[in-house]
Amino acid sequence: MSKAPYDLLPTTASGPHHPRSRPVRLFVVPVVLAVFALVHLTRSQLLFPANNVQTPFELHPDRSHTGGKGSLWEDKQVPRIAIIGAGAGGSSAAYFLSHFAKLKELGLETLVTIYDENDYVGGRSTVIWPWQTDPYEAPGSVGDDPMMYEAPVELGASIFVEANKNLQKAMRVFNLTYDAYGGEDGEMAIWDGEQFVFTEAGGWGWGWWDKTKMLWRCVISLLPYSSFAPSSKRQESPRHFSQAPAHPDGLRMKKRYGRSPFTVRSLVQSTVKGFLSLYSPDFVSRGAFSSIANFSAAIDLESPAAHLASDYFREQGVNSLFTNELIAAATTVNYGSPIDQIHGVGALVSLAATGAVSIRGGNRQIFESFVGSSGARLRLGSSARVTELLKLDASSGKRAKWIVKTASGEQGGTYDAVIIAAPYHQTGVRIVNSATASLIPKQPYVNLHVTFVLTNTSMPQPSYFDLPAKSSMPNMIFGTFNTASKSKPTFNSLNYLKPLPASIGSRFGEGEVHVVKMFSSDTLDVETLNAIYGAGSVLKVIEKVWKAYPKLEPILSPADLAPVRPDEGLYYLNAFERLVSTMETETVSSFNIVSLLLNDFYDYTPPTSWAEWDDQA
Image: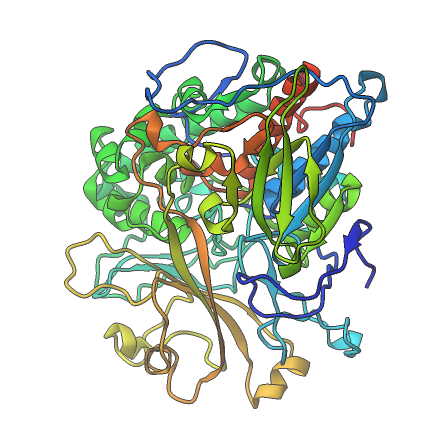
């Protein structure tokens, strides 16, 4: 397997967030991260050009929404830029800097070094082979029989969608192969801990808007940072396996939910339209934004961002059953948050995707390709962990500089600008001679337990759900925590991803072996898993705990938002996450950061987004 073509400065110890320590291996697998699905960057609170003085909020008197931009660059040597974090944001920032550096006639060159404490590129987008002895080691890279190779499954961010223009273009530019995302053929249901409040058989996607049946097909087709997206191959014949109300056709659905699905659809479409405007020449040429509050106002996200999703949808006239049964399931699986603990933007994002896909072999290949094509120096592993940023004040006519210090005491250096492309309070970076730390609000993150189960049963046990033994069961189940049930689900989601080939499954005994992925807020113990799949049917279990996504609480004041440029020469890419967190929005944020940096250093404003750039680079 070929190595990634970037300059990899070797460090072997993995950072604390990686599943385990192992030698550095950056194998290029198809990587695109969805996230998220960014297309649904709901319209209401985040972006306005830095060179535009319009401010929709009165800024907090104790905080500046932006550090000084500094003097224009006049040195003969090109600016040295450090990027902390090699995930979706950091990797794309390096690539976008190289994109503009190639425009030789403009003189926008930079020299970039990327630091990441993990021993791989991709951040929260990475893969796993649960059936391997070492599930984090790529088969074939350690002498395995290549005929035994089976594509990995996503451990982190799993899908992206049609409207994610940066990720879609990256897939084309890097010649990556996509798969229509979906699990095994079967049925979907929503479980509230006592009953299935919704059941579905049949295809997924937006087709339900065209037919007045299966009104829930769009709700979970989004999943920006989750791994559960609908399969286009699901059966069309409905089978009802629950004592709760089932809805085999549009008339019964309409009776239960009224026009709520159509109201929500309209809200989502408006959100998508607002987000797509971000890529346009008209929007980008206005200049980069240095205030998330101003950005939010520019695309009309203020109202949903300022309200809990449960309140927002109620004010929009959405039926409470639809909100608590369906939308709540989407927010739980996408952001690990019930509908009454997440702002409206997060909920709209959880509903906004169509055409969900993933990259064959792993989404992180997109981010590996960003780095590999950027020409940036890459420093990975625990010894490359950045521990301190020291600001050197600007001398007369010069810009401030930044000293980067690492855990090893080596590999650091002096830089003209630093891009923090990771959640600041998770980095442990100490910032000296700067007020930056006091300007970035603490952002709590969801602790998500991702559990992979290898089982020889093709569906969950009916008995766990208090159903008769011979009941036909769904193999994709989402939890909702917002109904009146007294008992709540033990998991957020359960999805049968795929059966293993017999050549691999036979290692675990007789019968077909299935790979199941589960999300939960706590560890799923052996007793619980045996109850779900049957005693003796749980063959292997692997758990990974992530700080998966930010807790998206309502944004009530500009003081709730971190500055994009907290100090001269210092840029905070993850300020965007307070509004929405997806793979695509990370790349949108990184393009904005790069635009802001180039304006600060060279007085240059891009004429359009990278996604709309008419070249292929």
